[in-house]
Length: 304
Image (cartoon, rainbow, N blue to C red; front, side, top):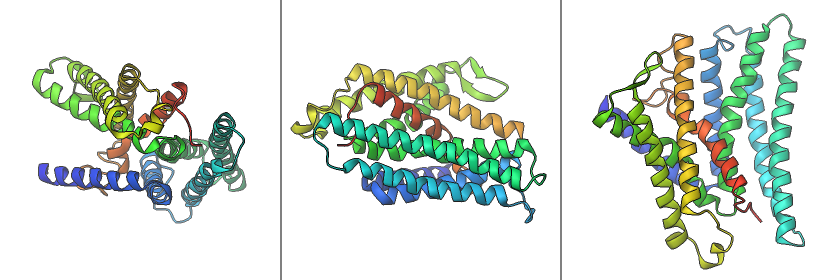
């Protein structure tokens, strides 16, 4: 099991490097597929997707909305490149396109789910429709912030790695510290193996990794012409990393809580040794929006 899990983990890291380096349509298509799988995993766990062939409307609706949503944000990001008179105007247009795409996508999805609920009533109970809406927001929409961070910011190809430093990086640091000195249980009823010491180690580790990455990025990775636009200090990066690590842990524990509530061991069997998409990306899903918001508040330039 250990070697299977390790091999799968290595393949995931390699795939992440390839797709995020490529960006553009390849990354959008991959995230769309991952989001569809995650939506179906959540649907099966929460009970609104079953083997009943007569009750597939919410499943098909969610899948269709996910594909449409990713097409929508893909073209919305690329509309930013329209010629404008100044950098300030370009920044304004970029933010309008991105945030309008998010708002329209979420509201339109809610309306469509309500249409399905009303038109097929009483085929679905209200809680099933609410679970479907939640699953769409929880997986496809929140995962899309990976794409929005990679493609929406001027230096997105570098900045997007903060998401993984805060999620997978903090998880690794938390595990190492927990094994070495962990004594006090953090959530004994939810995740008995996680310790307070491990959590502190995860937050501290993510903060240090983020600060180091920010320093290396500004000193070695960026071309001189970009340094004037790049204003993320090591202190700000450390704070962003710590916040991302905390949110990452909440995502991990929330996914575990859902599994306990609904009596399942894993969300799926797609990734050997890990389970399903939701089992492996549970922390990334909630970290991605936090990093996007943090970078926006720190006024890191959007695409121009």
